[in-house]
Amino acid sequence: MNATDLDTLMHDTARDAVDVARQEFDIALDYSKESVARVDDILLGFLDRYRDQALEDSAVFTLCNVFGAYVGEVFRNHFGGDWHYDKSNPDAPHVLLEIGNRSYAFAGICYERLVNDSDVSVNAYFLHAASQHSQ
Image: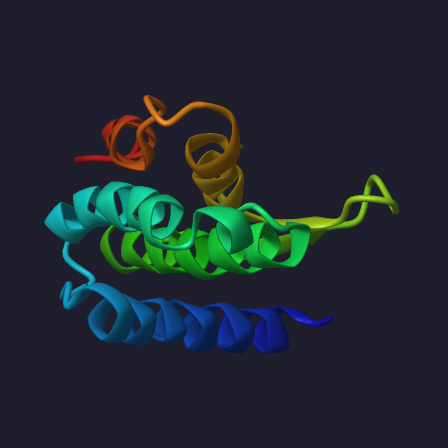
């Protein structure tokens, strides 16, 4: 997948997150830095509303990638960066946002919150990443 195709895919996927948040939870995601905190609530909302289905492999994959794309696009809009499709582990390829010498796994932090530890905060991860690139 070339960089342009990946950028388009992530942009479109982030737009899907906006639509899902509005349709499922009546929550507005507006690409502001402040809106990232709402992603924390949305992920836990899926657990509350769809407990059995939310933790199925395909649902986890979709939710984490959709909302990870949204958080990444918010980051890109405010701080820059480029999407990178990492195939270093052929069994588990993933998308990272790279800026300078750093990379951020926004889908990965969504996974941590959704599956492993509901106290993990997507917003805290975003704010930490932002603090590395604020002027």
